[in-house]
Length: 112
Length: 114
Image (cartoon, rainbow over all chains, first blue to last red; front, top):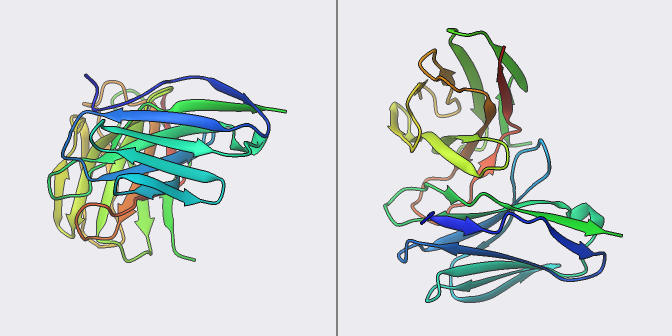
């Protein structure tokens, strides 16, 4: 089982819709979770971080964490064509240092 | 402006040649990391350093070497022992302080074997 799993997509949504991106992780002791956006050929850009169960909202983005189910998600409201990118889920496993384990990413395509 | 600078943006390596990728940060971050990304894949950790003059192997360290002589700099050498070095290389840094610290990335170096 991969440590961090994401559906590779592509996830195609119409402009203005809600895009829902999902991620599961295998290490139950993980405490920190991050969503990065990566445009083609560019480096990852941090969108959201979440550390406790529940929802965290920032503008059009909402991160959701359920540690019991080992599940973290990202919702993008009012999706725009500029949101089209690959979204990487990253998990900080226990171990005392800031090593991040990345999923392979979900490609999102927002069409007008 | 604070940030992480990687150079060069594109690099071409001949068979059997060692090449060095540069990573400099002025964020005053203690920890620095090197990741490798292959097409359609996530990032895999090559090496990381939590403090000057100390570094640790990540998941795919074979064929790579690093040094951390200064807080601001963490160069990565891709040696001839790395048989499949063509990839996108990303340098990142975080503040020291245990888990939960967000990582920030440089612009990346795309390495191609010719």
